[in-house]
Image (cartoon, rainbow, N blue to C red; front, side):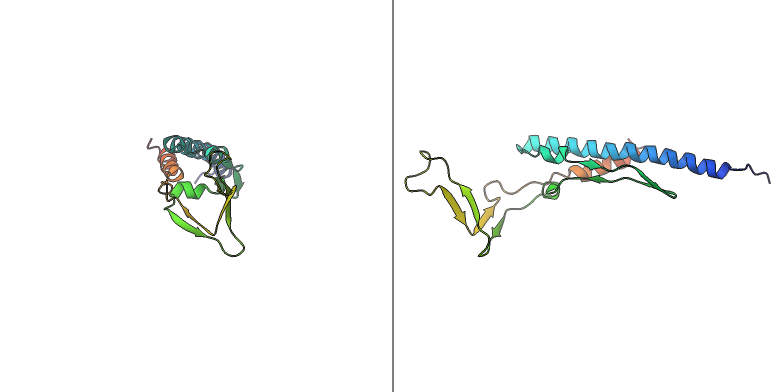
Length: 151
């Protein structure tokens, strides 16, 4: 049997270098794809949620031993849009109340208060809740197919 000194080590390093490049490419593709999907979802539903696409963060590609990894993170509240939310009642307690301004003077009925305070809010009763965006899950499928060379 013939051996080539250092061949396996050199091959391992080449494969890990290629894996690093692929992880970085697909990490960025996932961030971009999901951001585009959140933007399209916001347009369809008239939402001002640009903070979701703008707030996507990616980590550096890390290489430890024979492993290569990177992270994509989305801002807080992303899950509400990703999975949707049915209408529901949010109840306060003695220490929690919901306050919001009434319409400006001249537009509210005579005697109406400047602020409205309530112990519970029937959230989503007018809008029917928030439909699910599926932006991240669909982006994962799209990027997964690309990683497998399917699209």
